Amino acid sequence: MANTAKGKVCVTGASGFIASWLVKRLLESGYHVLGTVRDPGARERLELVRADLLEEGSFDDAVMACEGVFHTASPIIAKSDSKEEMLNSAINGTLNVLRSCQKNPSLKKVVLTSSSSTVRIKDEADLPPNVLLDETSWSSIEYCESLQIWYAVAKILAEKAAWEFAKEHKIDLVTVLPTFVIGPSLSPELGPTASDVLGLFQGETGKFAVYGRMGYVHIDDVARCHILAYEAVGAQGRYICSAAVLDCNDLVALLARRFPSYRVPKSLPNLYGEQSYGFDTSKARALGLAEFKGVEEMFDAAVDSLTGHGHLPAVKNASTPCLF
Image 1 (cartoon, rainbow, N blue to C red):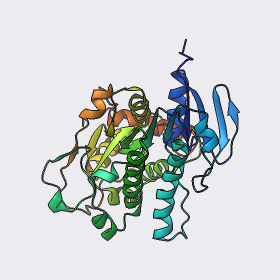
Image 2 (cartoon, rainbow, N blue to C red):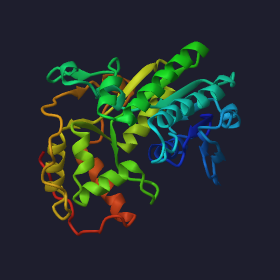
Image 3 (cartoon, rainbow, N blue to C red):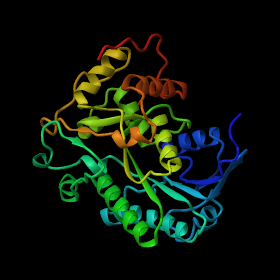
């Protein structure tokens, strides 16, 4: 029987891809979960309440009722939003949640979902061959801006603002930096990540060519990393969460062999030249995440989810053994 005495925690953006898995694992671990969404409902040991990242004070009631906060939510960005609006939304959304946290004297810890894009995007001169990037590394804002990678800029600025606020107000903050998150979706609605994966299996080349060399991680490992970072007494700082790093052409070659019935591109344009960086995940492993699920397992699960929700046609023997 699950432990039911682990306390009450808040998960922002509880309907999101990562957050929904985190909520699932927290409930299974015995936590009482209060999730914030824009359109609430409810079920046993899960309360859903309304909160808006861009409304100051919107998270006060939710956070005051909890002893821990997992901030996974990101503001909705409209296509018409300017660069400044997008960046300000990311920063202010994070700070609004932390301002609510500051008001709770019983708060134990905040776990913030950041991104490996805050670590790995640098000019080639700053990425030596075969370098292992760790949590001390930060992406270059100037280089991201030159490539117009505004998502990364927003994540960098939001995380740095969070660290400054936490230090000033003595909030116990830990950040989790997932690489590209792959796996089954609990919702039939496709978020941006699942949409990109679906496109790859439908023959699209644009998104993953732009991604270039990337780390990949199973959604369940990301949820586990968040919980371990929250529960570990000595957890501090940033935690990179990644199972493997692959060049985009190595990835599509693997997937084309493993899923020959789908229109996975055989190759993708190389937009960045030779890249050979990896990630040092020793901090996450030391938390207790000793083994990550492999690339084959995460994409098998993603394909099963896409077919189960009707986004991909179900194909008999769609996957084949892969020795990559």
